[in-house]
Image (cartoon, rainbow, N blue to C red; front, side, top):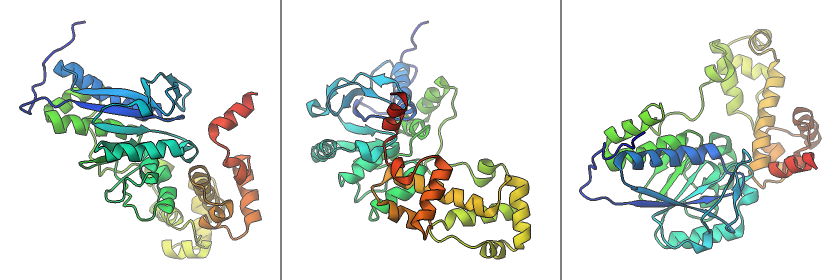
Length: 337
């Protein structure tokens, strides 16, 4: 098959190449990484020129294992980076565990050189910890936003798919990285180029950054009853100070008995147990993504009694809150040895 060349004309008078240094951190998301770099590779192929270039880095120069078990061989350890236009931190699970002092110090050093500093998914945590996001909006995966706001209350955190400024970019992760790549392509080469790249991947022409990260409640729970949806929204918005069944019923303008029937019919669950599961899921996010004391996590998720929190957590997830603090890759290794 012949490679297509020069099918897309540059809309700029001169070609300004962009080199991105991808800092890969253990357990990084392969989906995010591939979704960002593959559209850029396709653009290069379509224009017949390597406009986008990249290099792969790790903290020590060793190969880096993604969360799916695949390993990527890098070009250099991070401290041997000589030149680039932008740095993109690629991370995934157990982000606080992998944010070493050496990486944070290196990011600060590179920012002082005037590089564009970026991150996808939970990589935003690294930039925030390095103090590089104080004056710019940022975003990250919805699952991490609540804990992130607890850790960095002064930052402007948005729910957008991606945020781009002159010196920073951040992305919610997943396929939103594809949308970010298409944004760059359109910015440099125009909408025709963006459409051509999207066509290469049998993909739409990209979502706007304002589109929601998550499916709405109807899609997530496969229910359409408006009263029940109202109650679920109330629950999700009141996890730290749980509402009583009577308060939920009154707000939704139904009786407590009708509320019980709705949950039983559509979710095969009781309101109390469903609410408890939501709070425990939030606790799981906090335990995995922050260094908050377990007792503070319990309070932030609406538990007055620590013993009740601990028992409920073990019943839900099969491990104690303290055991949840063990990084996921360590738990996997312990099961295989």
